[in-house]
Amino acid sequence: MKLTERQGYIVDIVKERGPISGDDIAGILDLARGTIRNDLSVLTMLGYLDARPKVGYYYKGDPEKIHVRDILESISVEEVMSVPVVLDEKMSVYDVICSIFLENIGTIFITKDGYLVGCVSRKDLLRSAIGKVDLEKTPISLIMTRMPNIITIGPEDSIYTACVKIEKGEIDALPVVEGDDRLKVVGRITKTNINRLMVDLGGEDER
Image 1: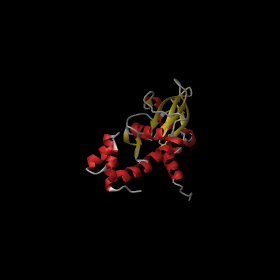
Image 2: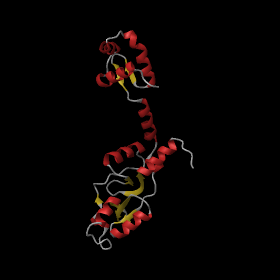
Image 3: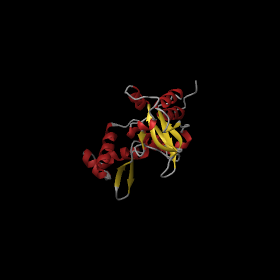
Protein backbone atom coordinates (compact mmCIF):
# COMPACT_ATOMS: atom_id res chain seq x y z
CA MET A 1 0.00 0.00 0.00
CA LYS A 2 1.39 3.40 -1.00
CA LEU A 3 1.46 5.95 1.80
CA THR A 4 -0.10 9.37 1.43
CA GLU A 5 2.12 12.43 1.64
CA ARG A 6 0.94 13.15 5.18
CA GLN A 7 1.48 9.59 6.30
CA GLY A 8 5.00 9.80 4.92
CA TYR A 9 5.61 12.96 6.96
CA ILE A 10 4.32 11.22 10.08
CA VAL A 11 6.68 8.28 9.54
CA ASP A 12 9.62 10.69 9.14
CA ILE A 13 8.65 12.56 12.33
CA VAL A 14 8.41 9.39 14.39
CA LYS A 15 11.62 7.99 12.89
CA GLU A 16 13.48 11.16 13.88
CA ARG A 17 11.84 12.04 17.21
CA GLY A 18 10.19 8.90 18.50
CA PRO A 19 8.93 7.81 20.88
CA ILE A 20 6.54 10.70 20.48
CA SER A 21 2.89 11.26 21.43
CA GLY A 22 0.10 11.67 18.92
CA ASP A 23 -0.54 15.18 20.24
CA ASP A 24 3.08 16.16 19.60
CA ILE A 25 2.96 14.72 16.07
CA ALA A 26 -0.21 16.71 15.37
CA GLY A 27 1.45 19.83 16.80
CA ILE A 28 4.45 19.50 14.49
CA LEU A 29 2.09 19.14 11.52
CA ASP A 30 -0.02 22.04 12.83
CA LEU A 31 -3.11 19.85 12.76
CA ALA A 32 -5.69 18.67 15.28
CA ARG A 33 -5.08 15.25 16.84
CA GLY A 34 -8.36 14.00 15.42
CA THR A 35 -7.20 14.86 11.88
CA ILE A 36 -4.31 12.41 12.01
CA ARG A 37 -6.00 9.72 14.10
CA ASN A 38 -6.83 7.66 11.02
CA ASP A 39 -3.30 8.09 9.62
CA LEU A 40 -1.80 6.81 12.87
CA SER A 41 -4.15 3.82 12.85
CA VAL A 42 -3.23 2.95 9.26
CA LEU A 43 0.51 3.27 9.90
CA THR A 44 0.21 1.10 13.00
CA MET A 45 -1.86 -1.49 11.18
CA LEU A 46 0.60 -1.62 8.27
CA GLY A 47 3.50 -2.12 10.66
CA TYR A 48 5.41 1.12 10.19
CA LEU A 49 4.65 2.33 13.71
CA ASP A 50 3.82 0.88 17.06
CA ALA A 51 2.55 2.59 20.20
CA ARG A 52 3.05 2.05 23.91
CA PRO A 53 0.86 3.54 26.64
CA LYS A 54 2.45 6.59 28.31
CA VAL A 55 5.40 6.33 25.91
CA GLY A 56 4.04 7.19 22.48
CA TYR A 57 4.60 6.12 18.91
CA TYR A 58 7.90 4.67 17.74
CA TYR A 59 9.20 3.59 14.35
CA LYS A 60 9.34 -0.15 13.66
CA GLY A 61 10.81 0.03 10.16
CA ASP A 62 9.65 -0.49 6.61
CA PRO A 63 7.37 -3.55 6.88
CA GLU A 64 8.39 -4.84 3.44
CA LYS A 65 12.07 -4.81 4.41
CA ILE A 66 11.30 -6.32 7.79
CA HIS A 67 9.38 -9.14 6.08
CA VAL A 68 12.32 -9.93 3.79
CA ARG A 69 14.72 -9.90 6.73
CA ASP A 70 12.46 -12.20 8.74
CA ILE A 71 12.50 -14.69 5.87
CA LEU A 72 16.29 -14.58 5.53
CA GLU A 73 16.71 -14.85 9.31
CA SER A 74 14.59 -18.01 9.30
CA ILE A 75 16.83 -19.82 6.78
CA SER A 76 20.06 -21.33 8.07
CA VAL A 77 23.34 -21.34 6.19
CA GLU A 78 23.33 -25.14 6.37
CA GLU A 79 20.16 -25.25 4.25
CA VAL A 80 21.72 -23.25 1.43
CA MET A 81 25.48 -23.91 1.50
CA SER A 82 27.28 -25.87 -1.18
CA VAL A 83 30.21 -28.29 -1.04
CA PRO A 84 33.49 -26.44 -0.42
CA VAL A 85 36.56 -26.76 -2.62
CA VAL A 86 39.49 -27.19 -0.25
CA LEU A 87 43.19 -27.60 -1.05
CA ASP A 88 46.27 -28.10 1.11
CA GLU A 89 48.62 -25.17 1.69
CA LYS A 90 51.48 -27.10 0.04
CA MET A 91 49.72 -27.12 -3.34
CA SER A 92 51.37 -24.95 -5.99
CA VAL A 93 49.82 -21.75 -7.29
CA TYR A 94 49.56 -23.47 -10.69
CA ASP A 95 47.56 -26.39 -9.23
CA VAL A 96 45.18 -23.99 -7.50
CA ILE A 97 44.67 -22.00 -10.71
CA CYS A 98 43.76 -25.23 -12.50
CA SER A 99 41.35 -26.22 -9.72
CA ILE A 100 39.59 -22.87 -9.53
CA PHE A 101 38.80 -22.91 -13.25
CA LEU A 102 37.96 -26.62 -13.43
CA GLU A 103 35.52 -26.20 -10.54
CA ASN A 104 34.26 -22.86 -11.98
CA ILE A 105 34.35 -21.10 -8.62
CA GLY A 106 35.69 -17.78 -7.38
CA THR A 107 37.33 -18.77 -4.10
CA ILE A 108 39.23 -21.80 -2.79
CA PHE A 109 39.80 -22.44 0.90
CA ILE A 110 43.25 -23.55 2.00
CA THR A 111 43.88 -25.97 4.86
CA LYS A 112 46.74 -27.38 6.89
CA ASP A 113 46.24 -30.79 8.50
CA GLY A 114 42.57 -30.47 7.51
CA TYR A 115 41.95 -27.12 9.23
CA LEU A 116 41.36 -23.71 7.66
CA VAL A 117 44.47 -21.53 7.41
CA GLY A 118 43.72 -19.33 4.40
CA CYS A 119 41.79 -18.64 1.24
CA VAL A 120 42.59 -17.52 -2.28
CA SER A 121 40.44 -15.81 -4.90
CA ARG A 122 40.68 -15.44 -8.66
CA LYS A 123 42.03 -11.92 -8.12
CA ASP A 124 44.82 -13.28 -5.93
CA LEU A 125 45.73 -15.84 -8.57
CA LEU A 126 45.59 -13.32 -11.39
CA ARG A 127 47.86 -10.99 -9.44
CA SER A 128 50.43 -13.75 -8.99
CA ALA A 129 50.12 -14.96 -12.59
CA ILE A 130 51.01 -11.56 -14.05
CA GLY A 131 53.89 -11.11 -11.62
CA LYS A 132 57.25 -12.87 -11.56
CA VAL A 133 56.07 -15.82 -9.50
CA ASP A 134 57.06 -19.32 -10.60
CA LEU A 135 53.54 -20.75 -10.59
CA GLU A 136 54.58 -24.41 -10.50
CA LYS A 137 57.11 -24.04 -7.69
CA THR A 138 55.45 -21.46 -5.45
CA PRO A 139 53.20 -22.93 -2.73
CA ILE A 140 49.79 -21.33 -2.43
CA SER A 141 50.56 -20.49 1.21
CA LEU A 142 52.82 -17.64 0.03
CA ILE A 143 50.05 -15.69 -1.72
CA MET A 144 46.89 -16.67 0.17
CA THR A 145 44.99 -14.52 2.66
CA ARG A 146 45.73 -15.98 6.07
CA MET A 147 43.76 -16.46 9.24
CA PRO A 148 42.59 -14.50 11.18
CA ASN A 149 41.91 -12.20 8.21
CA ILE A 150 39.26 -14.55 6.81
CA ILE A 151 35.57 -13.91 7.44
CA THR A 152 33.81 -17.14 8.37
CA ILE A 153 30.30 -18.24 9.23
CA GLY A 154 28.74 -21.20 11.03
CA PRO A 155 26.21 -23.67 9.58
CA GLU A 156 23.54 -22.63 12.11
CA ASP A 157 23.89 -18.91 11.39
CA SER A 158 21.21 -17.28 9.26
CA ILE A 159 21.45 -16.45 5.59
CA TYR A 160 20.81 -12.82 6.55
CA THR A 161 23.98 -12.87 8.64
CA ALA A 162 25.86 -14.35 5.67
CA CYS A 163 24.54 -11.59 3.39
CA VAL A 164 25.70 -8.91 5.83
CA LYS A 165 29.19 -10.45 6.13
CA ILE A 166 29.58 -10.76 2.36
CA GLU A 167 28.43 -7.18 1.82
CA LYS A 168 30.55 -5.61 4.56
CA GLY A 169 33.59 -7.72 3.73
CA GLU A 170 33.26 -7.01 -0.01
CA ILE A 171 33.93 -10.68 -0.74
CA ASP A 172 32.39 -13.33 -2.97
CA ALA A 173 32.32 -16.33 -0.63
CA LEU A 174 32.35 -17.39 3.01
CA PRO A 175 33.77 -20.64 4.37
CA VAL A 176 31.22 -22.40 6.55
CA VAL A 177 33.16 -23.70 9.54
CA GLU A 178 32.81 -25.74 12.70
CA GLY A 179 35.08 -25.60 15.73
CA ASP A 180 36.61 -22.98 18.01
CA ASP A 181 40.37 -22.54 17.68
CA ARG A 182 40.85 -24.99 14.82
CA LEU A 183 38.22 -24.54 12.15
CA LYS A 184 36.99 -27.36 9.95
CA VAL A 185 35.51 -26.26 6.61
CA VAL A 186 32.13 -27.97 6.12
CA GLY A 187 30.65 -25.85 3.33
CA ARG A 188 30.68 -22.57 1.46
CA ILE A 189 28.23 -19.73 0.93
CA THR A 190 28.65 -17.63 -2.19
CA LYS A 191 26.81 -14.84 -3.96
CA THR A 192 25.61 -17.52 -6.38
CA ASN A 193 24.05 -19.51 -3.51
CA ILE A 194 22.24 -16.41 -2.32
CA ASN A 195 21.08 -15.44 -5.81
CA ARG A 196 19.70 -18.95 -6.35
CA LEU A 197 17.85 -18.69 -3.03
CA MET A 198 16.30 -15.37 -4.07
CA VAL A 199 15.07 -16.95 -7.32
CA ASP A 200 13.60 -19.90 -5.39
CA LEU A 201 11.86 -17.58 -2.92
CA GLY A 202 10.47 -15.59 -5.82
CA GLY A 203 8.81 -18.73 -7.15
CA GLU A 204 10.57 -18.69 -10.51
CA ASP A 205 9.76 -21.84 -12.47
CA GLU A 206 12.64 -23.95 -13.72
CA ARG A 207 13.22 -23.54 -17.41
